[in-house]
Image 1 (cartoon, protein in one colour):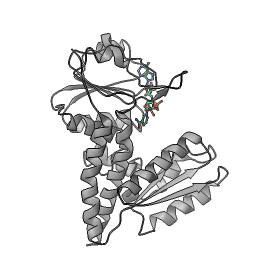
Image 2: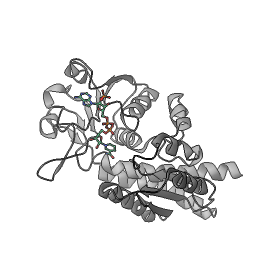
Image 3: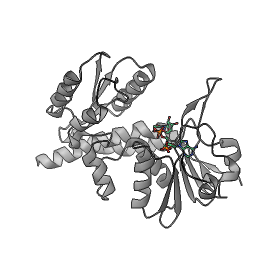
Amino acid sequence: MTAQIIDGKTIAQQVRAEWKIRADALKARGIMPGLAVIIVGEDPASRVYVANKVKACAELGLHSEHIALPANTSEATLLAKINELNNDAKIHGILVQLPVPKHNDSSKVLEAISPGKDVDGFHPMNVGALVTGNMRFAPCTPYGAMKLLEKSGVSIEGKHAVVVGRSNIVGKPMALMLLQHNATVTICTSKTVDLAKFTRDADILVVATGKPKMITGDMIKPGAAIIDVGINRMADGKLCGDVDFDSAKEVAGWITPVPGGVGPMTITMLVANTVRAAELSANQAK
Ligand code: NDP
């Protein structure tokens, strides 16, 4: 079997076009959705991510603000900036690019963002909403992975979904969203004994470990849908996922490539969450 490749770039364009219609509907009512992205410090990778986020907003004709603060910005100054944006009517979504420099308490920073503007979905209130099945803003990467499954026609209900990785930004929210869609969900971690026993039983396998090519074709159930969240830079400069694409694609039914799979969806879902935040705020104001 050769797997159907899930083309994240094409699906991201489709999803952006859907959300552009919703953004345009808001604009027609005089509401311009706005995102503020705060970056603290000079981390080159973070700067690229932030520039791409701001660019994606511009492509959809949204308002965006890029707030670059020096690495030595005090936590009090950062919290004051977040508070200012919480009260800024032009801004519907606020994102603080992680990681923040170590002298900041990242939990405190994320909790300072108004839950209604928390487009990354990391505020405990939005995490709680996800846990109780009343999702408001889902974390962008797993939300994008769910969209890839949906747009590829992979059915989720009643299937065994295995998520490898339990981070707060990917693994745990991914597992909760699959559960919400009536999958039977198993979460595996670095402490799981006999990982292959679980992965070989997965109809849907989501891998988010940061361990290059750790899932090989012999660990995959024939016909399974494989979502590879990993992004790893190899010694030769090329990117690869946490799944060994060449061996996995011979066994799987569907598979995401790296790059060009989950990656393009993350920013797309950030834009979606920003438009949704503006919709919710407009409806509240009615
Ligand atoms: P974390 O390092 O926060 O979490 C990794 C998880 O993988 C942990 O739960 C860890 O288990 C688990 N793990 C590590 N090794 C193994 C193993 N051998 N077997 C089973 N589980 C293992 O990573 P993130 O969730 O933040 O990111 C994961 C990957 O996704 C990275 O490659 C990252 O670059 C990528 N990523 C991609 C994004 C995108 O836009 N496409 C966005 C975010 C991340 P334990 O908890 O026991 O330590």
